[in-house]
Amino acid sequence: MSLLDRISIDPGVVHGRPAVRGTRMRVSDVLALLAAGADESEILEDYPYLERDDIRACLAFAAAQADHAIIAS
Image (cartoon, rainbow, N blue to C red; front, side, top):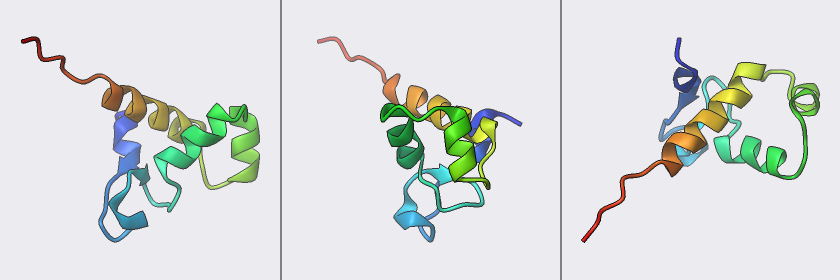
């Protein structure tokens, strides 16, 4: 299974925002926690339904989104 398989986009879950599959935890929520200085262990303690690979999947998803094509004129 690819890390990105852990991320789902479903219009019926958190208004179609990317979320960790099987949860209502948005990718942006995990990224915000990391940006605020939380480490993986702290996130996993606060959200026991997440796994380490879910956090890594959020990072991989964000990296993929940030890697867009550049159109030269």
